[in-house]
Image 1 (cartoon, rainbow, N blue to C red):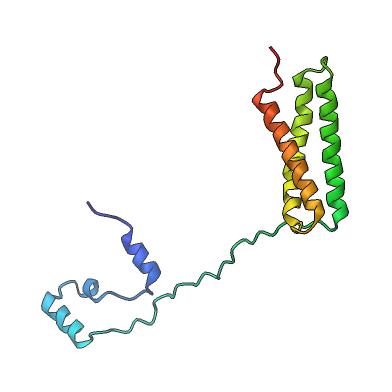
Image 2 (image 1 turned 90 degrees about the horizontal axis):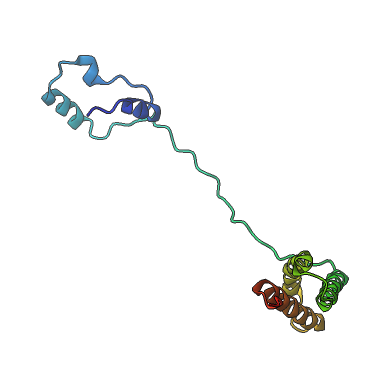
Amino acid sequence: MKIHGSDEISKSIYCDKTDKNKASGKADFANILKERVEKPFPQIDCIQSATLVSSLHPVQMSAIYPQDKSQTVDRLGALLDLLDAYRQKLAHPQTSLKDIHPLISAIGKETEKMEAALETLSEEDELKHIVNQTLVTASLEVIKFNRGDYITS
């Protein structure tokens, strides 16, 4: 099987040089060997050097830092308001679970956002304890709702 096009690859790497073997066509092996032995390491000045790829820097992820605690407190207040609205809807027997689902989805999304804020608070900060307890409560309610604990038969 003959592979066509392999000459093009070698030509793109090396500069155009006339091949002595092809030019003479009738040179025998002994003459070629003699030429190569006399010049054991021919200098090839026209080899293209490989271009170096610039160093790639890894992606650095940084934590989301709130500008101040008031932002965290505002988000916490919004999450508590959602939990209160959820509690009120659960208390009314006329409200279906289908009506409550958008509210529980909003609680889940807000909980995910608050988890990032929790990471930015220091261990000594009392606000971290309050945020943590609220996130635990909200996460448990989302799990209970999705698991079907509120389905009555």
